[in-house]
Amino acid sequence: MIDRWRQGVLVSIICLVLLGFLQQEQILSALHLPPLTPNGNLTWKEMLPFFSRRDILACKTYYEFGGVINRLPTLTFLDGQKSVCLDQGVAPIPDQCVVYSFGNNGEWSFDEQIESYGCDVYVFDPSVWYWKHHHSKKVLFYRIGIGEKDDERNERGWKIMSLTSLRQMLNHTNTIIDYLKMDIEGGEWPVLSRWLDDGDLLNVKQLAMEIHLEHPESIPGKYKLLQRLEASGFTRFFARENPYTTNSYLDKYNVSGPSCLELAWYNTKFVS
Image (cartoon, rainbow, N blue to C red; front, side):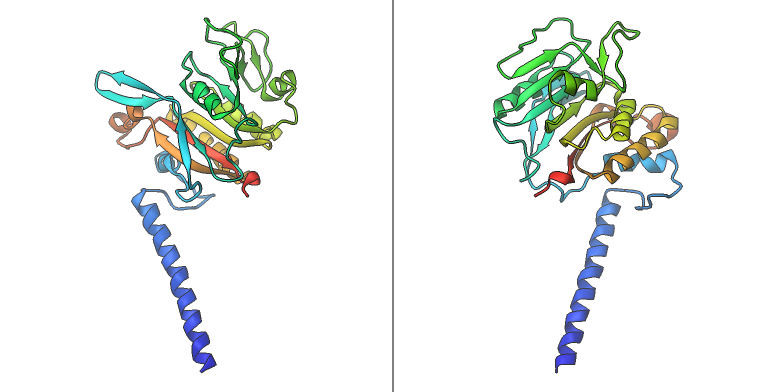
């Protein structure tokens, strides 16, 4: 009798495991994702779906802060909003949270709404000419750009600082950054590479980036860089294609895929 019971339990476990694999394959198939082969020799076209994927179970509750309506001749969509995971452990704690916002182009909806949530917000953008240091009670603006290294005056005449230098300037060397948002129009890749090399993201709870894929020959390097980020402990809980770029590669390369996406991760180091 006991042997039959054990056999029944074993069969049930095997069925559950197989069901799990089947569901995973169905999900991957539905999303048109490439096989999960970290060292596979994929073409850039096969890599494209990777950028749109996310772990749909990673964050139970997230909220999109900010955003403005963008009206184009053939398309209207909400732009500029950033997704924040509100799950225990990674959620910003009101009246204690610190947010770094790199790139805002004079559009303050995210910064102001995350301020109303209860965060101290530090905004950096060297391209904004009309500004006040104290934008509001808890939003401070700096006409400084984020870069992989310090540069008092780059080719555009902008002051650029690394994340390490900015932390030192603000006396935040050991401060946990609850949310770091970067939207710097294609300049994100060398900056992200530097952060990973130097371990700058160890004390960052959540990271949001607008990524730009642009030329096909650059996609493999960007693919590997995001793999490095996620292998370091960052889980991607949000991904959204910029609707204006959904078919960027269709006419020339006969493959559907966006050239610009909004992605967000949380650092599993902080998961409760």
